[in-house]
Amino acid sequence: MISLRSGALALLSVVLTSIACRDTVPALGPTPEHATGRAATMLIALADRFGTVELSPEVARARPRLTRYSTTPSRLIDDKDLWTSRGESERILEIAGGRRDGRYTLFHHLGAPAPRAPGEARHTMRLHILGDDEFRWTSVDELALGPVTVSDLDRALTSIFLAAERGDAATARLATGEAFPRASASLSRMFVIDSLRTSRAPDGATSVILGLGLRPGRAGRSFEALGDYARKYWVPIRWRMSVEDSLGARWGDFTKRDSSIVLRFRVKDGSLTPMDSATHRMGSGVRLTVDASVKVGPFRVGVRDLAVRALRLTSPNQLALAFRFPAEPDWQLPPLVARLLRSPLRRPFEGSGALMRYGVRTEAHPSGDTLSTVWRDIDITVRESGILRFFGRLGGTALGDFRAGAEKEAERLWEESLRGLASDLADCELRVASCE
Image 1 (cartoon, rainbow, N blue to C red):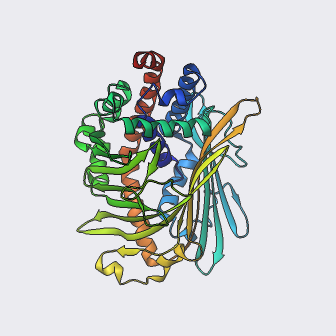
Image 2 (cartoon, rainbow, N blue to C red):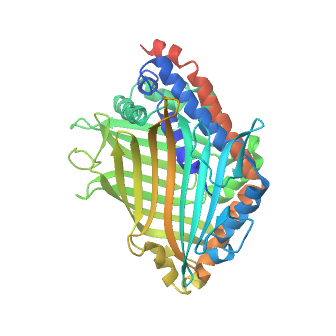
Image 3 (cartoon, one colour):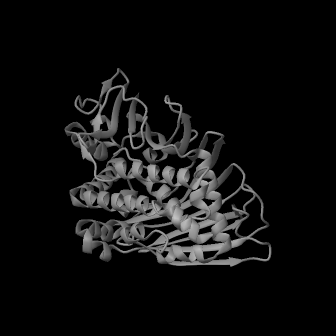
């Protein structure tokens, strides 16, 4: 269903990578005390939303139906219990997240207000009925992070790249988990850093190769259902993504095969730089090319040469990435499915293509303080067909298996890792002093 989990885990990865306390944590505020407090507040907000969550009865009923019929929305338009409001050609679902009686809860909320306290969330989904079996989904998800600002996060990202360039003892501590022991001990039950290699080129740029690993067998010792799910669904996923600019320069290669994930990129002076050409600044837009597949029975289902236009949107109070999908990829499908009508698969890529945006914005809070919110929005149009029902069943089966037991264990893993990292940061001032 509607979720910011992928965005939150990406943000968590950034925070975990930034283990050089002397550089990155101070970048999050004007003083070490402010920086540590802002980081801890952000992590607790993420732990609240993506940790152990209680679903109100109406949300619990809505989730499986949305999952199963998102690609065939005609099955949803007359569901009176699903939507918080209904118009002639539009259906709206509003969900709020926050603490109720000491427990973080997701619940239907007509006219849900924007999040105003760290950890509060708002999810708004709209289904537009276009006719001729065509439907347009638009959704916006928001989560308040606290007083950490867009400028803070931008400086922290720069300091991460600077630490990677140095390749010093602080970087080595990333691999050992010495810097953040609680978070490392928790996350290492599923994810491990297999390798971290850096090399300096004559032009002064530093090449970085970071190898990560999934360990479902290790996870199964503490989270049996999650370990089984990861072994069945996560390990067989394969993907490769390359990033190029308009000049054809490569800016990164990222691959996953079986249990291994490898990230390759170059940095110079705290910024990304091309991998195999003269160093220069990245423009506002790049092109991503993605191959991805998952195993379904004896076959693999996925895409080849999926083109994605990525545009960086920046302002003093916002950092965002917009992704457009302007062209249909080559589909990797089982033989019988491949013979089905193909036109509905083209519909999401027609016109300007489907849109997905991720961002962080900083706004003035009514109290006079600042509040940053991480957000995601999606805009996609679909035309119903048998092949989309096929994809809907695949997604419904995978998510149904996840929610049968692995979901609660995953929530515990995220929550323990995030809260562990917040506890590690409570000692950050001492670590900063020891680094100096």
